[in-house]
Image (cartoon, rainbow, N blue to C red; front, side, top):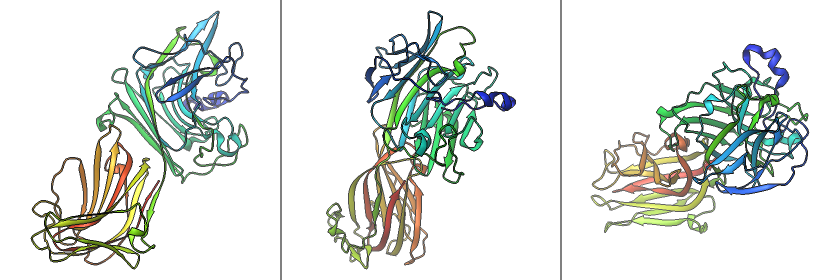
Length: 453
């Protein structure tokens, strides 16, 4: 992780900027020690009597420096032995990639000694040339300036010693107690970060400490350390690891002479997988065996759902006073990022109910339902509903209705787009996509449905 030069002393500090992982030549690790925690197997970095980056520092795999307590929390500690300070670092044996990363901290990292750095980041030791080590960072540090309130730092590498000022951002942080939770979402087109007081997830907006994002509109940058290919957002490639460390900036001893300990409650990683596309050009939807028809009647005439001219049509006739729903659905497993969106074309053609709410259900001739699982395990349905005769929705538990009741009748609305987490910030993945319509007599069309990251 790159040290950001202090703005008030840029000329001096820019000479001492280091990567939070390895900016100096690193020796092979000695006496490898591993342990399992938070769903991963971790390697404890160990350099013994050789200084290595970042810092450069001595790193120890002693249980005095890295251990799991009885409550299952990870402790990283900088210790002093025989006149030397030994730092702590762990990294996963498993590879990570695009996805959502969550770090629950149980230490007041807002009050660190000015020479101490805490790093939560991704790192690939094999791809500096192609992707600048695939490094996405959250750091807590004062970088030698004890008066600096901006202890929280987000960055996407390379920042080249703070020279690429658009690639990082720093924020003040004053915690309400010891607990905090920190997120980043890494995709090919955007990286977004946020930090909150407490361990509540999803966190209330009132607990927000800071948030920032970095998109693909920035200029490509080369990592000077290895003259890498210019990149905007690094790709993970193979062998990218999740890394946690506690170290001393430029190997300077803690200014108060005290050992330092940081406690991490747990980390979560949800990989970003899969996209979804359906344009119905293969004829009837039944040609795709993954789709399942779901027509409900409750004793009413059945609705119909079919494909005509490469468009999905859902309709019902002879159903006045007796409503139903005609849908198809497909089970999926699509993990979400902050930028994952659904897009589609939709055309509400007919509805014989004005106002949009029937006796027991919504009256919308064109509906898409996304079944979502949240970070706390709840299932929530987001409904995108279209009509031209007004609309109302019944209040239901675990439903979020995004309604467009005043569309133009029988006119396509092309390329409708919605970022899914705008309406459900703690959504983790989509498990079902359901498309159709419902009401008394109705008719609606869909085409070109996709879910993209």
